[in-house]
Length: 436
Image 1: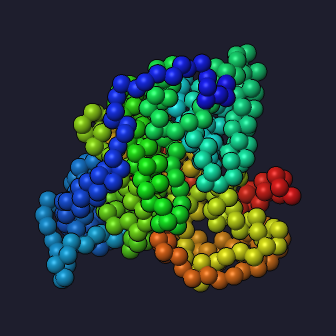
Image 2: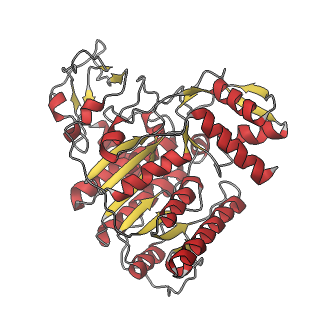
Image 3: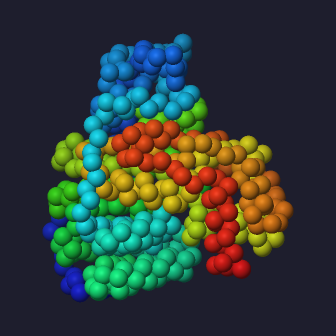
């Protein structure tokens, strides 16, 4: 149930498309994205003025959502540079004529890459809980404590045993775990052939804005080459649906109040964000060339039980609870759309069940919280005052994020249900029960 050396004999791969030259790929993708069409928006919906604009991206993968609201024209600002739209409020009418794909409700065997991680383990758990079979692939890298990842896998094994006892089946028929790299073509082909996979949820990635600045080539291999490897498998084995993790980082220093899928995202401010945007472009290319159904999900700062130890929410809870100093980067006014893990998983599952031809969705809470407010909530539920060391703002960090989730609401039926204070309370409760 849990082996890389499951009963799969090694064999030589007959294809070489997995061995991508990452530098060439990323360079070409950036060049491609900079060749976008700029179009002007001249329609204001009723009495609303949701955005100001002198140019809206005409990406063919998305423009069907709002074709009636866009004119194929070029418009420049006073400097002669094509500028991006800025969205001042949610814009649900942009998607009101988009066709809705109804969910597939039957049993699935789902490949979940990165399922030893934070979002991946919660997603795999939810799939098992509803009766699906889950195939896990995770390389178990040491970006953070591998023991945390092993603990997540153990929770999945426990859930598989529990479900098997309910159904009268075998846990081995519900969960199989492979410890390996998605770029290992031999391993991945053997897994696909053994399990006849038709549903993919690709969450494996190198995360972290700041570390990507230190080692961008590692991120390109893991995120760009890794996504390409998954897309090659999807093409080769004619899968039913592919869901891929993207990030709110692709919005860079957007000036919008609400980040919308309709704005252009071609000015990332970190290598990590660039690799995530590259994954979206690759997804559209594979959809266009091979008619693959692919959905990219832009996650907005996810927190909750079993959160990544390197992320601020986990660090703050842990260090405040133990009386250690926390590092606050900047003056505390930066804002994030912190989204509880339960809501994110709800969106991921909804995307898995709905094989849209090609889509990009924001998954967030839909409102931002200042860093200082976040720390205050942690103090409240931990019951201790934070010892704060103020640090300079970090390169690659953005001042705020805030998701417009109206597209996911219409096309996925998604909405967040866990408010900030409730989420912090649950996270602190989990931490206390697990570590104190």
